[in-house]
Structure formats: structure tokens, C-alpha cells
Length: 194
Image (cartoon, rainbow, N blue to C red; front, side, top):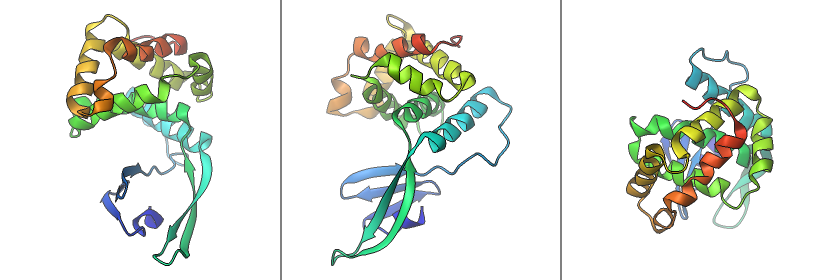
């Protein structure tokens, strides 16, 4: 987190988030949960397992801070979450935001989730999510089916949330039918719908 704050246009907006202004990007920073006990609550446990999966399956990349003369003044190697881990994390985060403090973020989470899954081989993506273990895979599958199964009230509501809260041209272009691809991924992942 410290190296990200060293960027000239970076602004820390929480203990785990940095906002860049040129271009406009928010970066979420996650600590590893490997050394911590897993929570007992089902959703909290799933989120902790998803964070572990994200850390373990991430790709290491080196980032640096460059001064105005083009000289690299600081470098760090970080792990960037895989597509499969981001699907798990986004699937778990948006339901929490719906009734929570960050309701508007639920729309962009749904939009992000759709963009992570569209034009992807769903069987291959499901296999990649499956690396996280049966517990998380089943939980993510159940959540996706619950919110995104075609021709259901939950899908209609998720679609309205995305369009109402994300409010951008990209989200406006995503149809309810297109969003149901997330339910199809849920079917492939399995798990009992909530």
C-alpha cells in the first residue's frame, strides 16, 4: 500500500484502497489471510477463503514509482488476482454492498463481474475457480445461480441495480439476458442456491 501512495496522483481513500486520478482508477489492496483462523460464519468464511485463493493464484508483477525526470524511485512486487479469484471476490462482495454502506458500488461490482465472465470459456473458468476448493466453488456457484438465473425476479433486480447504481454507457449496454450468463456459470460451478 505504501508504494502506491508514493505516486504523485495517488490518494489513499481507506486503509485498503488507493484512488489514482490520471487515469481514474481505484486499487483495492488485500492482505493475506493465510496466518489467520477462518471465520465461522458461512459468508465471512467464504470471503476469507476467496482472499486466500486470490493471494495464492495471483500473478506477481513489479510496479514502480517514477519521478518527473523518468527515474524509478521505488519498486515493489505485488500479486495481482487471477480472473477466477476476481470472479469469486466480486460474487461475494456485491450482495454485501446491496444493503450496506456502499450500495452504489453494488452496481459496478455486478458490471465488473459480467465483464470478467463474458466471452470466456465458462467450463475453463469454472475449472479455474474450482482450484479454490469445493467449499468456495459451491458457495460462489450458489450465489451466482441465486442472483443471475434467467427469467427470475432476482436477475431482474440485479440488472436494475447494475444499471441504476453503475450509471454508465457500458452498464446500460448490458441486457438482462446477457447478465444471465453469470447464472450459467453458477450452474456449472454447482452448490445449493441460497
